[in-house]
Structure formats: C-alpha cells, structure tokens
Image (cartoon, rainbow, N blue to C red):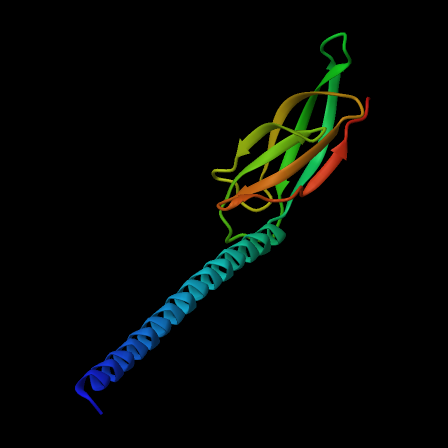
Length: 154
C-alpha cells in the first residue's frame, strides 16, 4: 500500500470514530431530555394527587341558609349562611372557604383560627331558589364544592 492509501484509510477510520462518538452523545442528550420531561410530569401528577387527597379529607358544610326579609323589590333576600368545619383533615392548612351563589364566587371567608366544629356566619344577598355552595381553599388551590343548599323563602 502506498502512503496516500494509508492516509485515506486512517482518515476514514477517524471519521467513523467521530461519527460514532457524535451519535452516542446525541443519544445521551435524547435520553436526558426524555428523563427530564418524565420526572416533571410525574412530579406534577404526584402534587395534583396529593392536593386532591387533601381536598377529600377536608370537610365543610352549610349548616343553614336562613332567609331574612326582602331587601329590594327584585326579590333579593338577606340570607345568613353559616359554614362549619367538620372533623377530618385537621392537619391540612385550609386558607379559606369560597361561597358561591348560583355558581359564581361571591365571598371568600378566611379560616384563620377555625378549629374543628367551629363555624362562621356571613350575610349575603340572594334570590329565593338560588343555590349556595361552599368550596374549601387549601395551599394548592380551590377544592371542589363541599356542600350546597337551596334558599327557600320563610
């Protein structure tokens, strides 16, 4: 073999080594990217599951929506809504309770100092037949509706 043929063979071998190394690096980068996305999705899913588990443990109820008298000619009634925290989920930090009237958030009650079986009453304005719902608020967001009642006239 001539020296030129040996040089070409050597260059070809070097090129094959470089291509192999580059393919290995690309494969490692792809594996790292896939692993990153999988761990992020698992982490997000785990946090969401923990949040839902907290929501299932926290127990609130509407004790009574007591109607007052008509306050305006449109049929709006002064309604006292009493909300109580029941047993369950005592270790979960509840930051508030949202009160919804006919599906719209109307009030948010802070829960500082609420112990188990403590209750708070707030006055709202709602029409007879309106639906009052409550939804606890925990560190990760608002839970699903925990209880609902329909306002009836006296």
